[in-house]
Length: 231
View (cartoon, helix red, strand yellow):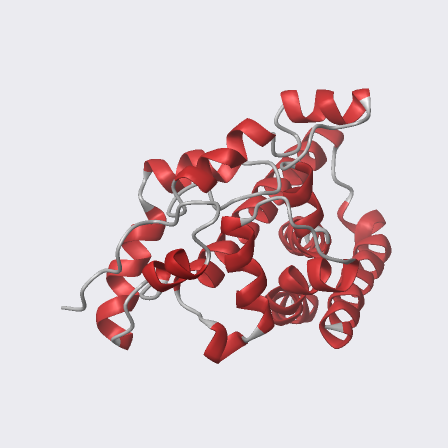
């Protein structure tokens, strides 16, 4: 866990340093920067959903051990909260691999408005995935500060009512940073489409052991129904 958190922080520092050095070269206007920031925040939300969907759908304790046990326990006991290492490592591992590679490729390209914008997207996404589970935890309890309550009402941070939909149906509303991407992904059935594509190629049945988990943790929570049959 410490390795992946450290690797993701290294990606964040690399992206931030590159952006600072290249900023004066590209000379972006404020409206352009605002649009880029919003795009980065949307990508970060989508990325959190992709990680969440992958953890819930394709892996089990035999393949990823404690990480999957924690995510499955969370579905049946939503208010269980773990420490910083567990929370930060969930998003840091995929972030370090995916956005680390993307940042390295982007840095090899000539400095331009396009490459600066891409590097900003990787930076925002890496930061949000580092704290992704903290965004998630905020959606499970009333906000103490007026600023955070306002941020949740404005959907700048995922509000509890929005995220609770996922706990009624674990096959939708995976995105947990601000929830923006849920409207697009659920509306276009992005996750179901990917499952129909990945399942036949790999032979893996999505969420094949949900019923077993429901029997083991019957005290609270309802998982997403019986397992699908492989075709």
